[in-house]
Length: 110
Image (cartoon, rainbow, N blue to C red; front, side, top):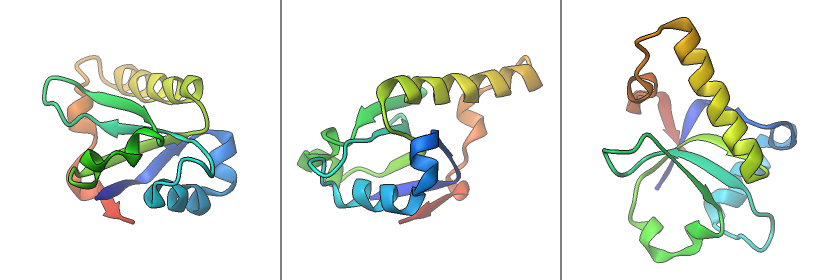
């Protein structure tokens, strides 16, 4: 199941039509338009995962809970969003912990 962060980070292309982009990701139809999602890592040792929506087509992702914090139109823009998140956190608090920034209560389903 895909859970979306309430204050989803987006690039300019996605910000024009966020609901349409979310629906395309949820339907897992990569042949329509490929996006790059920034999710909380499933593995406890990692912080985030950057993956293309083509990857979500595999059955494995039907059984995982994905917590999406960012949505971008390209990999470069997704890395830029991640850099922005980390810069904001570390500039506000030098002992910033990225895992503590996103709580499960801040996510909504579809």
